[in-house]
Amino acid sequence: MEIQGVGLTDVGQKRDHNEDYFLIDADIGLYIVCDGMGGHAAGEVASEMAALTVKRYIEKNHRVLEEFRTNENTKSREKICALVERAVQRACREIYRTAQADKSKTGMGTTLEMLLVVGDKGVMGHVGDSRLYLTRNGQLHQMSEDHSYVTEMIKRGKMTREEARNSPFGNVITRAVGIQESIQVDTLIIDILPGDTYLLCSDGLSTYMDDPNELAKYMGRDEIDETPKKLIEIANKRGGSDNITVVMVRGIPSEEEAEEQQLRADDVFHQLDVLRKISLFRHLNYKELVKVLNITRVEIFESNAIVISEGSQGTELYVVLSGNLDVRREAQSIAKLETGMHFGEMALVDQSPRSATVIVEGDTRLMIIERRDFYNLIRKEPILAVKLLWSFVQSLSGRLRDANEQLLDARMATDDDETIPFLDPGNVFIEDDDDSGFIEPPALHAEE
Image (cartoon, rainbow, N blue to C red; front, side, top):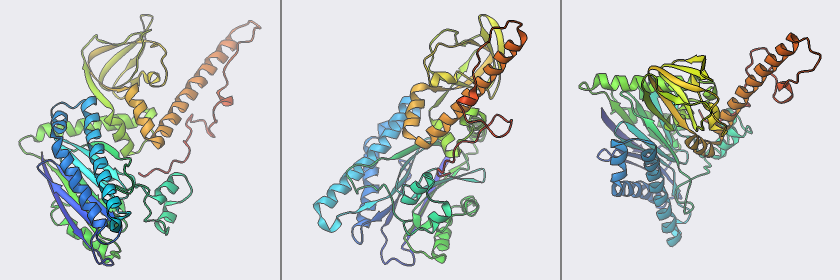
């Protein structure tokens, strides 16, 4: 698969100088957009310094890229994300110290949006309100979340999206590279599939392109060489109140490897689709599903292999991508598992022994999530954590209802006057208004 990258920047209609900066380095697979702040001769210094510092740091640590390219696993994924974080932190420190040493540059900083392409993966690094979009199969997904005042207000339920669009604080950001000596960096590993198109842009474009269907249409054009120019023209016609920068990256299918690439794409789609249908992940949006996919690994089990044993300790959730499994308790078969089903989820939240043995029937592919990786994810992602924990509550509530019904049936079936105690989930959990057994989670206003 070939990676094509193009970029363009424009001063806009209202500014007299350009504080944006973009970088494209196809040799190391690095694509960056920075939107500087701090006034003339300061914002533009910060944006350029950030991009070039990140580039130098990644070049210096090219061995991490090679390790990830040749042997992708949990350890190499952690290393590549840490590399991106450290590169941005290095830029943050250098900008901050430069501003401290030169009073004319006091307060300078920059947003930073980067995509590091390594093999068939992309690693996002994100600080500020510049954005990373992905179009896949004609659908637009915003992979970054704005670090801005209005976004925080939306997440807290104190402002609607319409109010945010009209807010006088719309340009106030909560994170920037160089304002302080260090900064929290958002990272995300994304599969790059043939036909995927990524857009990195400053808010000079995103302010005027808030219709996802319109943006997806332009990003989906066959030729992307002229698309940055067209997007900038649109932003300028609609006001051009800020500098406008656009970088586009596309995975170009290779004819020689077309079949292999299609199989890989189908497998990624299948994994995301299976995750989406699992009750635990039912409330997650596309970006959040990708984050969960980041912490999974896939293993193949041969027929008659024992995946888990009754009474053993375990720390993994298993999802069936293909194949069949037999669930046994005390050597008796009690259930069958097939594609799309999952088991072992309680191991993510407690340390109780496994309640059953699971044996493979025919070759089977399983997606596996470790408790350690699950905990690390929910520590970093509070909104995602609330959604997952709400799903756990739903699952436990359902189990309590089932146990309640079984005990009630047992009480009715006995002629003994002794009262059989039973659990009443209505005393513990919010009851739904209908009989569907499904409760909507609290409103969560995260960026989609």
